[in-house]
Image (cartoon, rainbow, N blue to C red):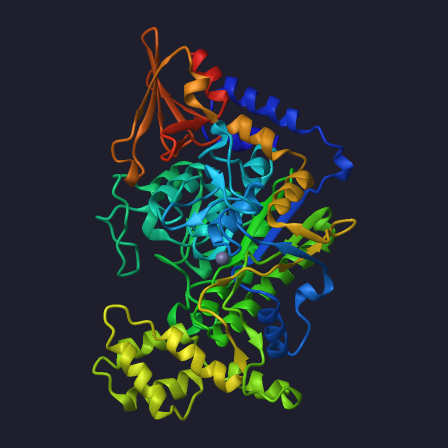
Amino acid sequence: MLMMQKFKSLCLSPIIVGFFLSCAAHYATQDEDERFHNVIVLVPDGCGVAHMTIARWCKGAPLTQDSMDVSLVRTHCANSMITGSAAAATAFATGFKSWEDSEKAKLLSMRPDSLLIPEPRALPGLEQWRPSATVLEGARLAGKAVGLVATCRISHATPAAYASHWHSRDDNNIIMEQMVYQGIDVVFGGGFRYLISRDSDVPGSASRGLRRDGEDLHEVLLARGNEFITTKDELLGLDEETRRVWGMFAPNHMAHDIDRHYLAPHEPSLAEMTQKAIEVLSRDPDGFFLLVEGSQVDWSAHDNDPVGVVTDYLAFDRAVKVALDFARSPSGQRTLVVVLPDHGTGGMSLGREGVNSYTFTPDKMAGWIKRPLLTAAGVGALITEDAGDTDPSVIRQIVSEYYGIDELTAGEMEMILTELADTPYVHLDAVLGPMLSRRAGIGWTTFDHTGTDVPMFSFGFDRAPQTVDNTEIANLCAQAMGFDLRDLTERLFTDAGVLFDNCTITIDTAGVEDSMGQLVVERDGKKAQFPLFKNIMVVQDDTVSLEGLTIYSLKAHKVFLPRQAEMLFNAY
Ligand SMILES: [Zn+2]
């Protein structure tokens, strides 16, 4: 029934609905008893065990994850021992290692042409630069509701890897278009700018849109039957009928958890978004898949700012509690909950050179971390806003009131003034964070990512995995919902040149960098257009929905699309 309702809302013809239903039946192959009804993956971006231990000391009570099973996850990507977020999320969304390197590619759920690690080897030609199906796409085709929740812009690496396919994580307009046409039931996060034209303002803000393709994706979402909200009040006020909703709570990223009260009071918390997402998604009788990202733990770790790390981790901890409470409730039966960071960041440590190990009590550390009213990033924003003339007395007052450091040394003031002079690249957060860290006895080894294993916490497995590769997480999630990701990739991403080998095909890439372009298929006077990054076929004035996206692989100069497209083309 649910499949019918969903696809009706996309205005499909009966013939196509029939096809979807037969596909759903094909997926019901695994023993129902062994499958999970719901799967929730929660990712605190960019942290390791130290971040969690320090957060626990500051909380003064166990973390939610402390009651879950624990495993270890290996995180390396295709080209480095140290991964980036796009490659990491690609691994646990698709089951394949990918490449993250600014010179070559920063892939989102696409295969590279080769691997460097553990040893150099080229991939088979047909696999190179090919999209890989994701756990979210599989859940959707299995009839489940699907959702994404994050505190960054929703087109950022982790959520993007679940819902889009492209060789560069930085092309937000292309990613956002795919997310809109992916048919996701619940999307909560930031990023309104990437939905609307550069000629439009984001309502209620000073920001402008960023799209250059003439499309208004906000209107597309409404036309496709989604509710659209922008505030915490609207989120909390969603009624019991809501089944499909986008919440864009910020033009770009949302605020850090502790900064929200001062900088963006209309935004909801991660726990509030998670709670509402589960409420809406669990109305689907076929179950759901949900990804939740605590996106900004990573950014504070890049700043070496323990205040942002701890407060955003504890905000994430509250979201984990929402998920776990649901999984343990009668309505959440057969729910798998998986919690894992994508990689470490900062090389954070509890203790540092100069700290006397045996007299280091919690108050000496937590006292410093709990005093500030804002993250280092929030304080940095206040200083650049208010101390335009770099008045040291204004800086002293702001750092004291909002960051809890009353006595900046002359050397520290010098560092702040030097950074302020470094226009236009002022990055005060990474100057302030280390100052508080020194006082709190917190050590750091880098402003970048680290390559050590990360812990994974789970609830629902009969036996939790021990040490696993991050690619195995994708397969565990797929198995939990009863599908196979390799089969799914064959079904969703076939090379158009192979699929339509008896037709003339043209790949029109004009404007592709702005998410335009199309595949044109012609045979015996019949012509169909498949706009890139969308799930539609336009033929003889009809617009027909596909069960997946049409993806252009720029590196291979090929188009990949659902195998179903050939049947639909022939039917006309
Ligand atoms: Zn990350």
